[in-house]
Length: 288
Image (cartoon, rainbow, N blue to C red):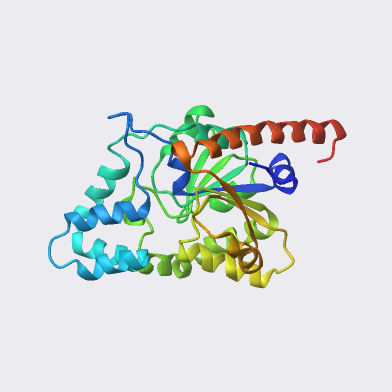
């Protein structure tokens, strides 16, 4: 991958926030069976449909149409107590090990990593590698502003954590409550979007809440520098690049998804070296 210089510079000066989506865990493998990988959201929801009792025709139709939020809400209500069990079976019990992608993200040494992932693959890895000095903060924690302003390395769990299933954000109703009940947290993320370069890794524009958030921000700040998002070849048609840049202020960086997204992992490792070289240059010039 050909990494843009503005992104390298933003990471080097620690003026970037890495936004870690579910796709970043695609290279993780279960420590239990040595083969299975974390399911993406459509795969998980389709598994849930197969476990649900009663008429699931509407839910299956919604999944085919790509309306994951509505389908998820109906499934969560239908499965009730079993919902949290299914989450644990899919994302906790397999004991997914961190991948080389997670290692490279940690080595980029961004001050803040934000993630909607409710699993703990990166959280645990970052704390182990840092000697427990990386702080984990959630959208409902009162001290999140302290982490954003302080000299900490932090992971912001923007959709909650599997440790507290009732706090996780899944459904359209959940997203609505997040926007209104935790508006102060949303304003903090909005401020970061304005003052930092966001580097989206493993994130999909199929997330309607993320798309709406980016569109609103791009509309309010049309002259702001671009953010960057990695995306596997074929996921987003290239004809949409200009509209995504104009409407969401995001530049797409494409890679091959073959062999467990190997190209992304290798390119991120190369990015680590580019960022470190840029940091050395900034330090030599005292150009902070």
